Length: 538
Image (cartoon, rainbow, N blue to C red; front, top):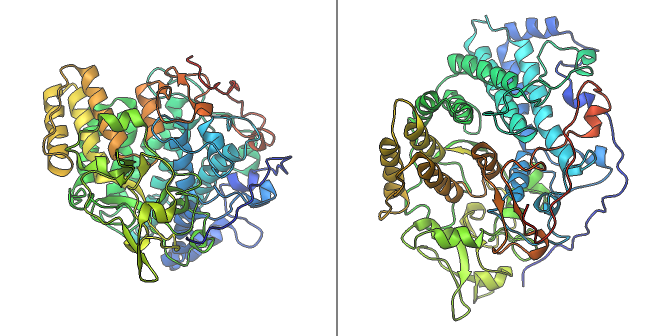
């Protein structure tokens, strides 16, 4: 009934690989203006830096950033939200159709771990390009500047650079604890020349975290507490440092930073999440991509996050072609009293689509006639995501201009619980109290945490994170951080992509693209592991 765009998948043939030195350039081009000249101009008028700062955020939602490299359009090429989808696809909590319409299929089957993978190049380019833009701002504004506007811009760039390194270090090596001396990724300083960038070996995990903490320490000192929605402020920097300290098992510091980050924010209420939500910046979001109807990713029609993640969109791959589902075993563990069980729709014994605990209608009206939204949109299977609402909460909305969450206060509360429960200055009982307070107040009034040991408590928090942060790009990092296996057998994953992998399997770290190693021979690579085979337990 609705208009469906007929899509032709682009064959992954020979790649026109271009050197990525431009993406990794840490300095503004000097053919028209030197760094000293730029500094002089910015000192006279600091607002001129604003364009460079805004580019930090526009790069996160850039459309078709690797089109020239690939030689064609790729419908996963819509910014950092696509990286989030790739990461969630690697794990065990987001099954999807294994079909040619699923642009994240090679992430779901883990065949994207090659030197020439378009998805692998996309991730590297996305994060290092933003990092390079951050370096331009950092190089322009000296740390000793006394101008508040300039320091705000420098602080944003430092925090964004830390965000990029925090992602990179978790993607290209195992987690911090136990792997501190393993090779991670190259560190690119704002003072580095192109020649130095082309002879830049991988830093160790510990060295990358040292850079992250250094950047965030300075950012926190100079950023304002509040700012423009979608841009980094001091609270976001605290949140990023809370993530880093949790990864390093610096639990006291993680708790303190998560407390600071959460101040002034309020989680979604039970009423607010009893209907499709997570589509617009609100009181629970510390940071997110603010999307307007005029952004290129929206004007593209279907090359954007809602096209793949919103089951209510009138213009996309989901639903009908490649929907996003929850692991059926995980879903079965969610209590019926938990409002979040309504974030996924199932089919009852009468064959009717239902979602428990929801406060929204299934009806859609077209030309005066009423239709069931599930039938209208062509929903294909149970456990379908209805967490992410349509733009302006309008069913069948073809305008995919939903905002995208990058950090919510709920995550900070979960960090507080985990960190307090595992710290030397806390206890499991104190962690349980924080966890119970959050869940009982905002998700399930009947919830009780039954964990009696640290190991059980870790799993209790992890379970809450798997539900609460589903679809927001956090699940893979938790698998790596907690050293968890990936179990898909006996679930609703299609048989072609169902397997069980052990913790820290050899295929988990990504492969550095040859576009980098070709121009930077000092950058060694991770070993390539064979993709998992259907039905196997490793």
